[in-house]
Amino acid sequence: MTFGDKLAKLRREQNYTQEQFADILGVSRQSVSKWESDTAYPETDKLIKICELFNCSSDYLLLNDGNLGKTADVQTVEQSNSERDDAAESFEIRVPKIKERKSKRTIWGMPLWHVARNARGFIAVGLKARGVVAVGVSSCGVLSVGVLSLGVISSGTLSLGLIFAVGLFSAALFSVGTICAGIFAVGAIGFGVFSLGAVAIGDVSVGALAIGKYVAVGDTARAMIAIGGHRADGSVFQHVGKLSAEMKEQVKALIDETVPQIIKWAGEIVKGMLS
Image (tube, rainbow, N blue to C red; front, side, top):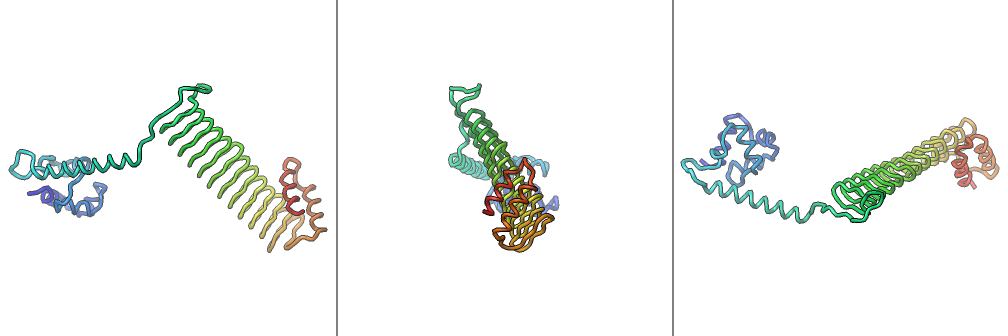
């Protein structure tokens, strides 16, 4: 019996379908079919798992009945494994691992620059990077760039910054992103003291849909002072459509009266937009 014959026999004795057997090993049904037809052979780790599952030895599976030595089946398996190893090595050449490199010069006890999987230096580049300037998949630094980025100035898919952040999701004093939050937030969806976006929510908001505590300007606006293109809902002042010169002056005066001193700068931005 060949390897494939034995494997099919053991599988049927345990009442496994090819799909069930493939799921147990984490391979495709086509792989099991190729094994059982002797057109391909499992990798070493899969072979070990098969032996454990069916409580048999690898010799039983790999050696043809009656042969004590190494058979053509074994040689074929080794050749197949060798080809896979060569393919793996070829892949590693195309996608090299990060080779660690760093400067001998240090600043504040850290290398001037460090390139590694886990990099830590004044300038750090790696999968995980920590430094004054950090660039990596996960990065943390004064200036930080990465998929997951944390820094004083930060840029990344998920970006958290003390002063400035740019990212798909961002949060900082000054924040720019698809979804952003900050004192000054600009994005498709913005949350901030001053918020500018398609959907803007904040104390002072400007956007297609603007919801503000004190001032909102947009196509649809809702706030104490609401100026809307098509709809406005305001408790102190509301107007739909274009403002006349007299109305602009009235709104500016209301902004001065309504917006707290601590965020007067946000009110001044809106006043500048009305001029």
